[in-house]
Image (cartoon, rainbow, N blue to C red; front, top):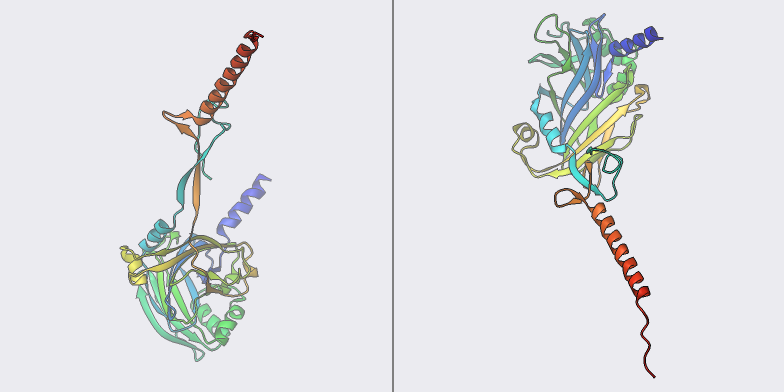
Length: 354
């Protein structure tokens, strides 16, 4: 049984994740890569969309490629890693004290103490059905921007460039080809040879024109392991997905208007002006159930911030419990009442003279 459990855990660690939240992550042949989490910041102003994405990966792959469909001609640059630190600071939960009256298990006299609790370049040439719009070297990334009129040709072009592809990739690309979307193909490798891709990869920023806010997710159907998506949406109003597209219901962890910021990483994305920030978390336990891309819509600008409460016993002065003073006062009052009654009963009755 122990051997079986160890084998199961090992298998879950090295199982390939051919797809991630908004594209396909493809390792070199005979290597494995898994995407533990994808975190993206999306800026949409009604005309253009900017996506800054960061992958947290594991496995033994020294090189990998990633492909993302986009609805229009894309510009690709390196993202600022500090962007996600700034967003985490803005959306972190608030902490508040919550007081209770009666003592609990860790309080005197039930307990002796108290505890506060809280809840390299892409080689090869394109065929007639695949066009290379541009190719750039960006830090550890080799980026090719592609067009395709045939999903099989696009899949074949990638395969001939040394990547082990899932068999169903061409079929999943078909809807994008029919809608005349384009593609960003990225080859990435660590700076030092012989080093596996691990941890947080350098963010990549992709911009394109779009009159609707869309976050491509369809290729995640190819993933072999559960997927986790963290999404920061920076827009004029609060934005939420139209539906869950086959995953667990998206959870809003923060929603609020930000009146500008001095953080350079945020200002470069928003222009420095005010914006409404919505933070979402979503899990996809069974990726094969994903049935489309995320389309986000405007909803009421209702603010929300998660609150973590610390429960504390209500005290006064130097930490004297209010319940103890209340009980002591009640006992004194009751004792006084009893004494008064007894005194009255013992006092002889005074008769008036006729």
